Length: 212
Image (cartoon, rainbow, N blue to C red; front, side, top):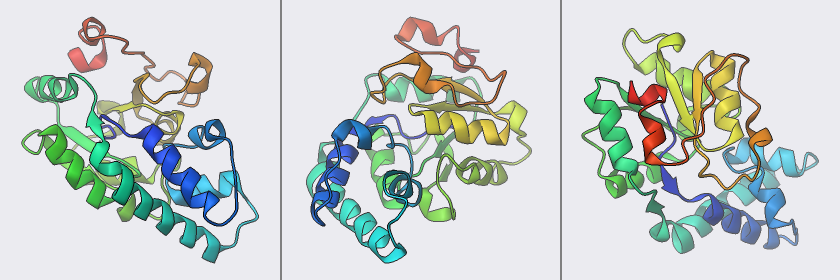
């Protein structure tokens, strides 16, 4: 299971920055970046616990509109992203996209990555009450898979919230250092004993759980 391997985190930071500025709120981009990987339901309370529900909904809608109108068309896949998923698929692994992103975004990323033929199951933030780091996105994906237990699954993620959500489900994890977080310590959110690997370049993949 994984979020779509596309380079969008910085664009979401910019979209949130503009949405917040639209109601007179200013945050350092690094502060916003530290929350990327969460859906609006988790990101906004982390930044501003005092916000009322109506303001959260307004900000969430503003972010979505800004991202779609100004940034989404510029999102690009990470190099060799399709190769990674095709390799896992070729080994008989079921490829699952499980993301806090909207279903609309995920549909676009499927075509951008040219992976519709590789993906068995998809779960979006639209399908759950609570997004990452809550476990619901991954647990929902597991429900859609026939006969796959948490111990048989691997989550590939590029934020600590992927690791945290997977850990709550008892799923092992592989961390991709593509999300822009600067230090290894930022990733220590998964369950104890989970598989924590940093795939820094393609030769490392063959020694990871994805290459076996």
